[in-house]
Length: 167
Picture 1 (spheres, rainbow, N blue to C red):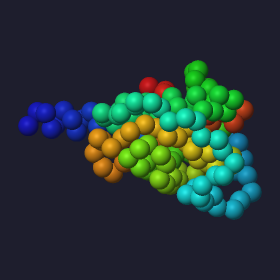
Picture 2 (picture 1 turned 45 degrees about the horizontal axis):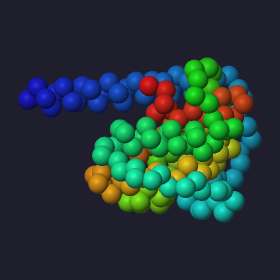
Picture 3 (picture 1 turned 60 degrees about the vertical axis):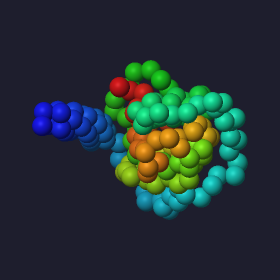
């Protein structure tokens, strides 16, 4: 079963690389942790955010293309809050979100998978960025569940870069 072994190794390498980058950048920071704050509830809609027009005719055929498209939309919808250049270390914070979509690409739910120990406000900033960029196009042809994860690499200016664009 060389195909299965090869797929397992590729998945393991990708998961290991992502974990190492996230842990290394999170652990390399020497900033003191801020005082505890109230927990963030990320599933509540944000009424003050404008929603860009739905992408016309975008139909996603696989999750890799969908993640890349979503990351690009997040940057486009948040031009003053994002960056696309080289990631400078140490990073301020790396929140990780799990985004669940409806078949039309609208946001159904957002869960926080990793909350940074410092600059906790970056979690809400990431949630707002995801909602601003929605809808993400038709995903009804993709296998369920319609979920994906994104790590947000925040710099000292509190601007983010989706990890999907840092490959």
